[in-house]
Image 1 (cartoon, rainbow, N blue to C red):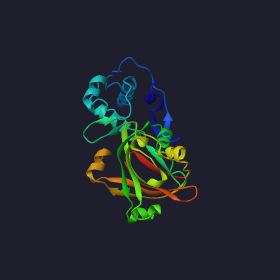
Image 2 (cartoon, rainbow, N blue to C red):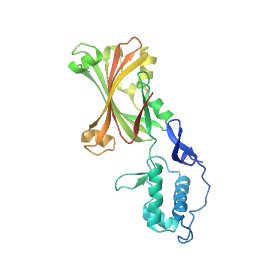
Image 3 (cartoon, helix red, strand yellow):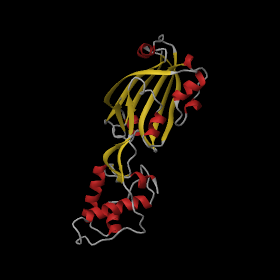
Image 4 (cartoon, rainbow, N blue to C red):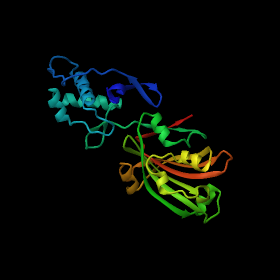
Length: 274
């Protein structure tokens, strides 16, 4: 049985990184057809038929399910009945609507912990803990000189060389945040773009190659509208508000080593306080 069959749920009980109550799904050979006049609860049977279809077709996060018309034909019911069943599945969070483009299997919600020690945890680890598959894409890797703001954040001289690294992070192939990191070049000599491709853990790289032990983070979180380019990368509309995190990460001695700006998709990221 696929993951959807194992984890499809009603959002009524807490289970780690997502609120789920496990339910079983029956194996079916075909969609159940029923006379709409036979029971006042036909939409519930239609709802189960839709779930069975999702299970048998092995839909995964991000997939679009058939239209209302197609589902009505498959189930042998009116579109109004399908619409009611879909509305209930949307309310439960089992499905999600994307404007006029259709109904989709939602991505797992990424829950990012907020504390002085845990905000700096690897995003790959966080995504795994929340039931998703981490991924990433390197957008740029370049060397810049520290301006006044970055020099203050990182306690370096104005003009000191910094690596600037921007990555798109995904959960089960859906984008959920854009992160830009600045780190003094002298702390990571010979660092190259190939070192930070994909979903590579930057903090693991700092530890394993450079012996840098991550200590704590100080961060601010606010909402802000984002430009068209970043909105496009996050599958958002231009002018929509993203959740913005600005943080300074220090090593175990308290020395700043990284300044990070993170733009988070408001529907795919939730911050939790510990």
